Every structure is written in C-alpha cells, then in structure tokens.
Image 1 (tube, rainbow, N blue to C red):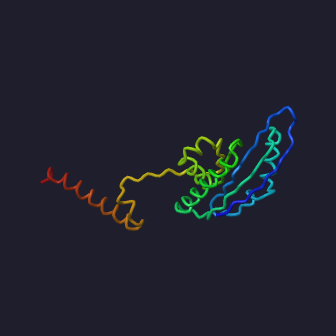
Image 2 (spheres, rainbow, N blue to C red):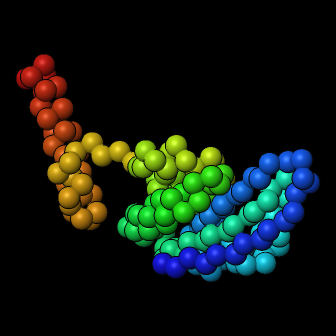
Image 3 (cartoon, rainbow, N blue to C red):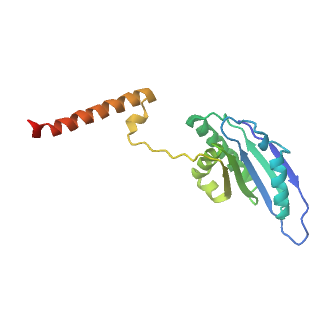
Length: 176
C-alpha cells in the first residue's frame, strides 16, 4: 500500500484566520489507483476550489491504495494501514481539519480505521462515504467462526436436521 501527497496553497483575504485541511482519499473495491484519487483529478480540483471559497489557506491531499479485493481480509489489512497513516498525518498536522472521502468498501475501511482508535475518533472531523455498502458483523457461535465456510454449512445442515428429528420426537408421544 502506498500513499501520494499533493498540496495547494491559496492566499486568503487578510482578515480571515488560517484554515488548513487534510483530505485522505480511499478508493473502493476493485479500484486501486482510481483516477478520482490522483493528483490534479477533476474531483481534487473541484474540492480544492470549494475549500478555497471557504477561506482555506492550505489543502493537502493524501490517498491510500489498498488491494481492493472484495474480501474481509483485504479490508482488514487496509484499515490497519490507513489507521497508521491517519495517526501520522494527525501528528504531523495537529492544527489541520482532517477528513476522509471514501468510495464503496473504502468507506468500510475508513470507518473501521477510525472507530478502532480513540484518538482518530477525536481528530477526524468527518468521513464522506460514497456508495458504501455498510457492513455489520455478528457471530453467534465462536467455534463456528473457526470452521471453513463449507464445513460450517455442513455443520449447520446437521444441526437443522437434528433439530427437525428432535422436534418430531417431541411430537410423537401424543400419537403413540
């Protein structure tokens, strides 16, 4: 995973105080090197212009390229890398307003990176998640989580069958 940096400085009216922004861009599934995240992309140009209109004195863009595969493991690796990058950026620019813009599963990567860090929950001012299929995980049985998916399905089928047989056995005495 690699990151790139682009910075633009604009001169605000003398009466306004300095406002610095750090924007981290996170691509989505199947999109490493997404054009919208690259230096001088139309997205960056438009966002930079809008922030300039809001009296920004500095806009620094970072991006993170992760594997982009649609797997939980790929997103886990990406969130760890993103968390480290965000913590570094917050330390290097403590007075800036830090935001994340993420697309698709990049939104899940960003949310998990920030949610698992008390410091980032305080310092990241916002996350923009575009077309993100928000994920929620729950595991009812820890031992089942350790089984490979095909074995887990077989185990669940056996449990269902046993439940059906047991249910029949409970209902049989009234018919005997």
